[in-house]
Image (cartoon, rainbow, N blue to C red; front, side, top):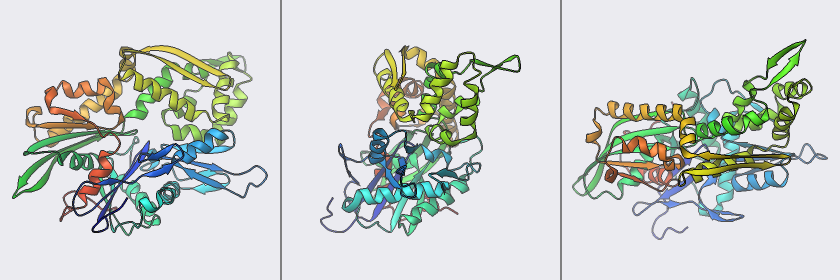
Length: 438
């Protein structure tokens, strides 16, 4: 990446549950995505994951990788590699204080800073020196039953400062996407942006107007909910996989037949929990219960999934099913790993029934955003949908029920937020758009 006149003036960082994207903006022109020379070719969507490996004969030595390099390390040696993804889900959770990885303790800010430093290293010259103006995306609502927003931002602040960022400003992720979309507007418009990530679904309504040739923006309303793609994944696993791993089965204890604890399967709701479960107290209970299970072969499958760290392979199988159902009415789910082979036909209507609770929460958040902006649906001129789950037909139907089809656009599912955040950095007054950690 070269800048012919002056160096970039702002950096936008979209730290996502699934992917992380960086973009640089100069004083004019479009934003430029930071690219990474990965093993399979240059990419800009950097997977938000880490791997930790210590040779069994040298336990004090550690190799840490991130993004595609972390996935590569895990695929090569899944049994010995600690693989962590979706850790953004812990950001606002006070209950998450630390985790132990290869005999070292990591707080959330330690995980994030480790990841960010690796991102900086892998980007190398394509990122260069970090500009003084850095804008980081944040969800409208963080994930969790009782999320602590200030805790999340303080953790972000610690991690980004370790990356070498002097001053960090935070902006809502859908607002970043709105700035990206607004560069194509040729007339005044009120725009609703829906951003569907792995952990959250966020909505912002912004009025864009041209005054003396300059595009001005006014925030009108916003809303968000802590469910999105990961919640859809869990519904698939809960229906197709967990019953084959012992959910709903029983075990014998002191002459009684008791149900296998459901809490073990709640870990499948987030990939990070699944990776952390290997060293938990629950794992010891699972091994013990396998001897007393009515259907021991199912519990043995659960143990294999956890012991052999099959979480990533399961994630790939679930993602493939979701992608196929976005374009086809029927698809086959297939999860193969070690001795496990689970296959099942799935109809799109069936999948939509599984995710109906999440669809309802998303629909309510859209209505809250409109109410917050004091606007009827007719008051919205354009709708821009971005993020991977925006491709799910049932998600798109939420908007087609409210807005004419010719007002709805989508695209740039991975790049819109980071690019918009970088472009936002050009604004002379960022006080209306950004916030600080405290």
